[in-house]
Image (cartoon, rainbow, N blue to C red; front, side):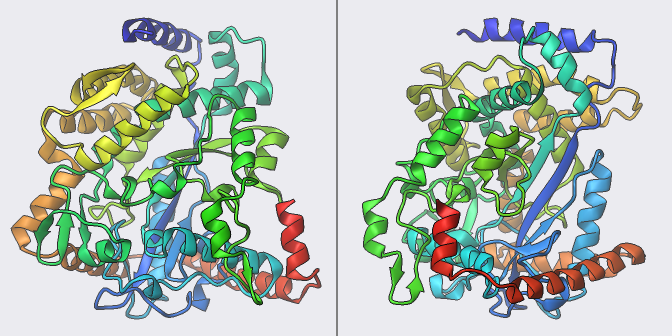
Length: 526
């Protein structure tokens, strides 16, 4: 369908929402952030120490846990209805963590510090309970399948759900005969398809990993042009993290997961989790008494499938993510394409969150035809092109089988977000969403304003290697958090109480009787 037709449909839908008699219809959606950071030594190597006990147990910690590596801290905020509350909470979490890190630092960028091969990346440990062992064996499997160094890349995930009051008006605008959870799930899948179509703009606007430490490339067996001492780059890259050097690894090229409907999404994930992969079978599942992976299938579990955005529902204890979605439908989406920003101590900022919120509305309200395999291949190509060459002058992407200048397409998307931002700004004379959109629009007219270009300029001006720059920035961030006054004593006390409680919960799980791990695993995977 030509874009002109899509525009008319979009404009009609947006007008329906504007005229619904509820000016704050888009306001009050719930948002949260998950931010990963490598713990590193004062000289910039991966920390080999265990996750600090003062931060609680990674197995049961609600807001402070670990991701792939024992050294990869993950900070998880609750959901908030405003961005400033969210970022204040994330700031408080950083203040608390830094009070218990000793001389260690949190690495300030997505691409890792100096690494000495896979052996330098310690796998996260979750104790000897069955659920703890399952988590660790899953990570062992990721290590043998993709290499541990790839798993040391960190990112920021943005979780978002639309306000409840929107759904009735949106169902009316769509003249839908379906309501409730089925309508919401179908609408979120409209959003997912359009994110696959347009999400490359997020890499252009916010990608900040155009360079890597050469030690990372050596460990990955990859090559890039040399930038300078100890550093390699793609001259026009925005996000090598989101390229085939990072998460878009070729090992998952056999895994195709449709977002045309909830049923197809669950069907494809389930198929991948039950289809043996010859290469993984060669690795072995249990060798002697040691598990190398949970199974030898294309995916061990749902979380192994890497995508830019995921449909999510909070699962019950022991419930698989696909089962949770089948039980009650999509509750929110998780945008996974954000690099950790070296320019923001907490890794993200309000303008970015405001843009993403408005972008979620755009992806919901634009017409969203089903995606066939030909279009999916085109969309994957666009994301990879922008990740590796997004700042290239005159860059062309593919839309409906035809080349189109990336910047023209990006301007079209930003123009369509203006009305959305006006709705999100309702009642606020500062018009923060419109201001956030203007900041992004400026990057389309001047590529030097993009974070990836700013990072290159900083490296050139300082003469530092990528690792030296990231280490200096990490030290500055540590000083920033330790010098911030006054810390919220009540909040820090709350985090300390949560840490102690998580240690008690983990100990109770360890003590509780359970079946042998082989039986537990078979039951979990069944």
